[in-house]
Image (cartoon, rainbow, N blue to C red):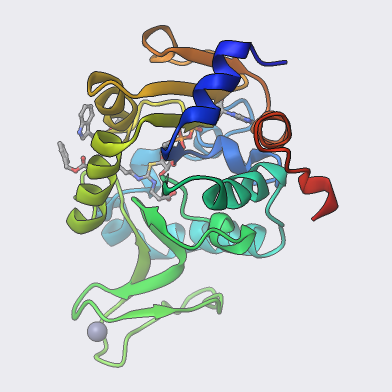
Length: 248
Ligand code: BV8
Ligand code: ZN
């Protein structure tokens, strides 16, 4: 399935950085944003994933996030997540950078994860900033409130909002330091995350994309593997490090 050049390159890598997007969770049953059945097909991001939309209609935005939280709490990590968790132990330095907010990498066993866009299971007070890991779904008609009385929002990064600077800095340091960079299951259109593979490329890392279809950056990268991450990643682990996650 993989060329000798690819196998040798991955085998000789000592510092691996991985960027994942919604595609890595698709085989778990979590809809992507821009795919055919994507979340953005039913809802427009402008109406939901931004602060103005939230202040205009917090109930609608909470309804959407509760729908996603419920869906995510009922799914499992897939073999793609498990393979990325196993890969962490195969190299000296490993960074897992995700745009996803579903927490599935942590459930699959990765420990050191850079969550660029926050986490859907966490809420934050818009008044005092207090955070809490809440899973309770708010009842229609009343909004989750903080002890200070402020309204709670999902603790995710919306369009037009800054990403957590310490996490973003660590992600760019990883892209600068790695000798191998994987871009997995992302359409590479959302910035600044989409700049990470190119940052790695520009400093001389070998950059591999895994996606079910070409993306806007495929032509710039060393290798673009067309396939499902839940199938390609376990095969890579087996061919390169002799690890069979089926036995996990
Ligand atoms: C910011 C919230 C400062 C949580 C999300 C520079 C240039 C251009 C635009 C901008 C720029 N800088 C800022 C912007 C504006 C904007 C932006 O990038 N807009 C884009 C759309 C043009 N960025 C921002 O606003 C960011 N903030 O930069 O602040 C600033 C502010 C204003 C102006 C300037 C600077 C904040 C971005 C974060 C937004 N939050 N989510 C939530 O509710 O989830 S975005 C959302 O998109 C998710 O986080 C998601 O992870 C992310 C990226 O999408 P993908 O993960 O790639 O998912 P997608 O569906 O697109 O693709 C899935 C892929 O998987 C597909 O390619 C598919 O083929 C593939 N796939 C499917 N199945 C499989 C598979 N692959 C493998 N295997 C499979 N089985
Ligand atoms: Zn508060």
